[in-house]
Amino acid sequence: MHPTVCLGFPGAVAVTRLMQSYRDVPMSLADACLVRLAELHPGMSVFTLDSDFLIYRQHGRQAIPLILRPRKT
Image 1 (cartoon, rainbow, N blue to C red):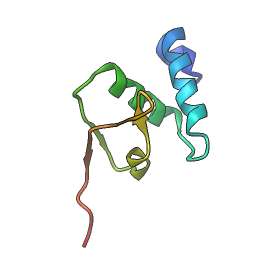
Image 2 (image 1 turned 30 degrees about the horizontal axis):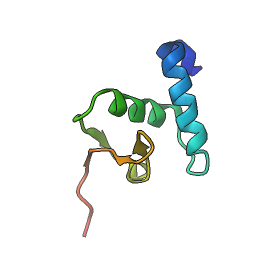
Image 3 (image 1 turned 60 degrees about the horizontal axis):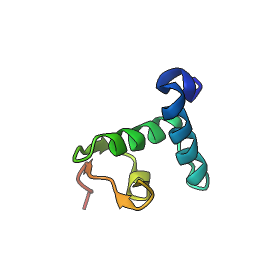
Image 4 (image 1 turned 90 degrees about the vertical axis):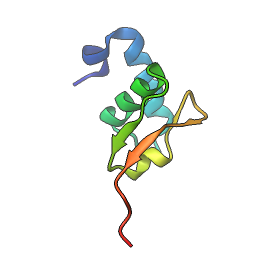
């Protein structure tokens, strides 16, 4: 699904920029949407099993608060 369909034009632009910024990771549409939601809702945490979220930043520089599963030892 194209980002414009699920987010409207302003959200689609922001999500597209995120995906372009992290194209070397690469960032999926779903990941970009979660990062964008984190930007729009300060103080909220993202629950994920995806370690790429340790790389992603909201607003380009701030770590995203995460709820991660415990690492196996």
